[in-house]
Image 1 (cartoon, rainbow, N blue to C red):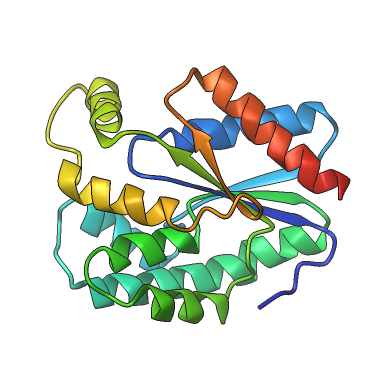
Image 2: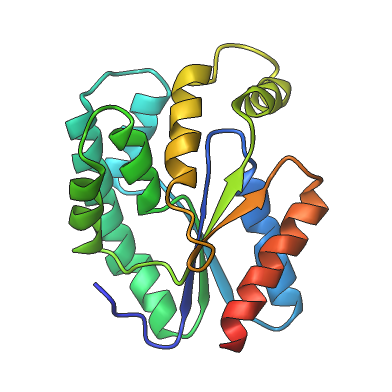
Length: 203
């Protein structure tokens, strides 16, 4: 699926605790201060499927990786139809706090075929114009999560996150998918992201 019209689609990706949500808001604010019209969206979304996924991640139910992929696809299909494509058609910059590369990587690390997950998603969702992978060591990510949430077991296993991080970095091509060092200050991280986005807009 390649329908974008005049807008640009930017995806922020990375392991849990890398700072995606904070940086999505920072990037939005910086772009809007420069006069660009933006929309920020998160995944899972607010559909019934997204709510089911949030329940799963909160630990209230368990499902197979195959069911997770199905729920993400249904949630994403609605998000694309109702939010992403209309914003792109209006010429807006759409900033995604996670997008389908998360499904490819996370469920791929649970044993499913990453290529099949990617193909299923690209049949229903436009490819990002730019994917920013916020890269951080899982140990630091876990420390951040515990600090933000007051401790507790809220991290999906350091070993699993190491596999996820390695899988993410395997998609970096230096062009449409780039690595951003997320271990630095929030200001430095946003500065680099903004450089990549402005370079995209100048093309």
